[in-house]
Length: 231
Image (tube, rainbow, N blue to C red):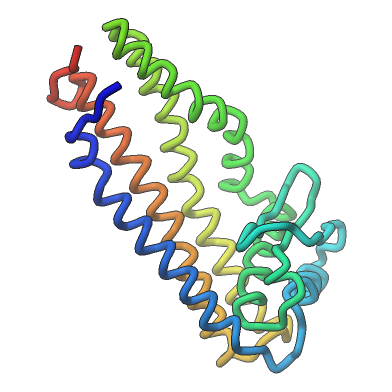
């Protein structure tokens, strides 16, 4: 095995961006987790209220393990909230819970980008794992065709990360608007809850940037981007 310093030249900016984004979302969540909403609603109650106020009553809300492991599963119509969000009345918890409820509302309204992202999940899982196998085979067997297959497979991951951006942005936009309209928070409280969502969105941007830079590196290594493939 070997280390290619050129790899760092390509992906280091994305890695640094990702570290900054992760720190930002954790510190912002911690800050506003100390401030409770005037309504006293927990994250789970806020998500349920937002959904019911908008005519969605067929979504199950469950408690999930892990820190900020919150997500919406469209296959089972289940909204899973981490304990720090499910049981907490903080502005951080309400912001995250309403964001995930926003995904459920996307699903209910057949939001195009959410449907496309969901359809890409199986291909992305295969492409993420398979790409590295073909990269290594192409590298050690000096086989450009295998390397190219790896690039194609990894491109699916890049497309998935880019499609994720409008999905996450729209879910946050729905949450910011509807948490006030549904009476969950006041307009002033919404501004603080929105800061948590804005910080979280940076992590998705960082993921997309890192994936794109990694793809550019593989294209460079293959010679398709002006570089010379290492044999």
